[in-house]
Image (cartoon, rainbow over all chains, first blue to last red; front, side, top):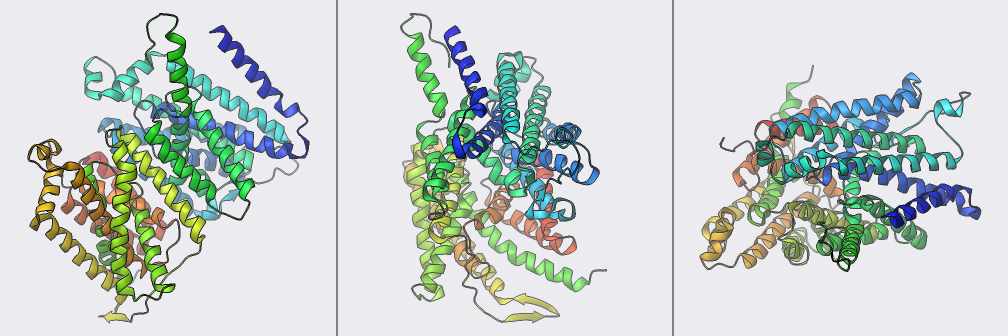
Length: 334
Length: 288
């Protein structure tokens, strides 16, 4: 494993050095794309914490939106620095997630039903944002107020994209670390058992409600942080881009495309979808609006039919099989 | 203080909206009851049928009624295609993947529509007179759509109860293992069900295009609501879906007048969420 660890370290150093490279006139754009990949991968990772255990939420846009809007509104109306605002936004979102998760686990809302309830939750948040237009700017969205004379470090608004590059990188690594910790923990086995059969899991002494609410709170907290960071970076929040069904499905698809059962799956899926849509956008310009999404939708269907473990997940499975076979050891359970 | 006449008007409009919603919910619920897969993209098939009617009328000059009939055919064809191309390969996949595959279809349809026809709002709104009954204004177009929706539902009911195929379809939804033993072919029945469900989408499309302008994201406005209605009525339960459609339509319509349009939807969704906790099997489920 030390070779893999070295490779990972080298990759990390390379990523850390990207902003220092002379990338020519397009550098701002390249940073912008990479920052988006980092932040959306982070959100995807947060989603997969629930998704991999059968808690397929179609309403993560709600957590994203509550996080983003709480931070933005606290700054715009009360002048609370995003340092504090983001913490409050995460707390509010966790509280909200628990309010939803408690009855869901109490009344055993699982599978299809869980997906549809979370879908409705996401829609409720989006509609509330639109309805409360005096505060939120309705469907036009809301811009983060400029800081004026305040220091950059107080308002967390930086003209230099490189700052956000490192923020995004740090967030992404945090997401990976949390995922890895969960993967190594007892909670993983417990959650897998719950995902398979709740009643059976409860019968062997697993505290079903506690685990489900815990993983939901963790996932919601990270998603809210992602939402707040995205809103900070863009200095703008919009109910369609940071809340609602479209975003919720987009998160799910990126993760499924990459592979939701593997550490780097969400990153691979997000990077591919963002890179693809950026490439198509540049290639076709404004000639064929919608072509990027069309190819994207088509790929999703094809992938779900032919590669249900996702791109990275499937490759990882093949590699693992290759690696374990010649050594003569026992095959590793995927 | 709100004039009671507005409230009454909202109630009447709610009933009229309920008719079309019930039609959508029945189509989706039929497919779910038989094939056990939720077509997230169901309402986007309706969008395509609406475009079909629009182009047949505005581009080729077809009379509206003929274009409407054609929409039923288009819908049936689309339903069968979706089943053959997307559903058949994933019939035995985990439910999550099935949900996501039809979700991918949703993205695909919405973006193809954007690509081909741009995001313009298009309508073939027919100018029929507005009726006035006892101080309430009722749009004749909506009344017509309501009547036709009810007719379509009666036709579906007759098909399911009076024909051999319909009876077989109901049998599959009751026990998919047993029906194969009885000599019917589930695969063929799935295909027929998908086509019938698609035809219902076609009817709904024809009835919606005379009331609303169509645009690529039209499905997003009615889609979530349609799932909620199906779940609320009990997935696969046709009578439940019918009643739930009218309840939800009433909440949205009256709530929209009393508070605001968005809040009407918010209230409807919150009611849905709460009812899911209290009665997970739908409002008509028998308690175990």
